Image (cartoon, rainbow over all chains, first blue to last red; front, side):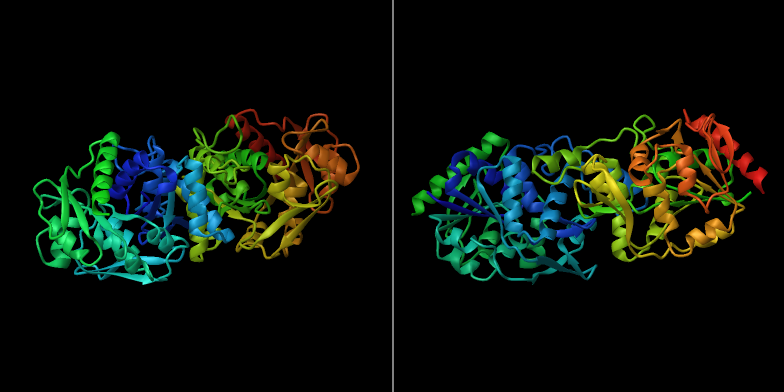
Length: 301
Length: 301
């Protein structure tokens, strides 16, 4: 079975880690959100791509859920000493990733090409592509801070400003191979990522929503019993959809795109569903969930 | 006594460290070579300014003679993992300096302004200015590798390619305050740096050679008994002046600019001289040499 996955950062990365343990490299393409990408210290930072890379490579800090294991923040300590811009915590190892990516982009390489090189260097065999080579930025209108770019809202403002609208700025061209990977997939899996700020950026690219909708699509719920597995999703559902957070609210948001959903036992959704534990407790448990998602997907074909 | 010092990296930094222990902040201006500055990993790197900053602040690695004490190379290890550009060893702490400098330059700050901010952050009270805010690059014609920029010759090629000519490319404007600091100095000290690649870049800036020549000038010899205290100077003298390395050859090179020279006991020069130990063994010994240089300078006024 050939699988394309739409993914954001942490939750998606864990799902992908499970799928990569179950599927051969040729059978999996991960299409990763880059709407959170931003420039900091003159570097091009792609948080979701890096979270996926660090998770799939086993280099990641599994306790913290992001960044690299054994990370240090010595460059940052010097930046702080000089009174420099220290609101975003860039680790020393992590800097190496951003430096190589930024150098390649300055040379004129595409984000898709340098992403492939970085993942190879990190020892990841499965195919991971950015959703887009151009700038497609996730913007949030808030009630208290006007319009914020994603990292300004999420990191600098700690996701506190209530959100009235999420929109996307910039180039709508998907990355090379993104639409083909979807069209050639037996099934598309929507990872348990935030629909508003991780999956929608991908779906708004030219041709992507239609390509996805034309395939069998299984979403994995990022909500369990009314609570987000991670991050600010629950309050975003309340603010943006005007309903309490639930797997059903996520299914409604994806209406017309998904055919089925893997949900936590007891969570009801208005599409075909398979109930299981959607929270992955460790790396083995990721493979367990991946197998359940794939077996459910197979039953839909 | 108000003193202006022309300085390169390691040897000059040690001399400046001694002078800073003897002179009040208002009485010393260090004018530092930036002909070695270069761009790497998208960062503006100013090796001589940083060596001076790390040495004066006490943050430097005194054993190694350059870089920061307790430095690590974790970002570099990741760059190597990805097959990136790893020929220049940038440490994690050091990266913080380059990141803040580069950010400031991108914002439109001058190198002079950001240098002042960096030195303040590092806790240095004395005034240190770059020789220039523009790009003034030291270039070396070699017999084996054509024309090389300084770091390509010095670090990448380990100063091995024989040099037939040193020249300077780019903007000839000195930094703001450089000519004034020289004109207002009771004495100008030429640090024990490489005349060809550390001091000449400063002297070739518009108005600087004349301003220096108009003041009492004492050079400190970078050569002791025919050997360079540090670096490739001895072979450069042989290649460029066609004579064996000696303090006299350095004095000849500075002909018309310097009035006197502090030399190693036993080294003869064709200008007024004071003999002493020109190699500084530790931080206290730097103050010892500084006092001797200042007392000699005073005797010339």
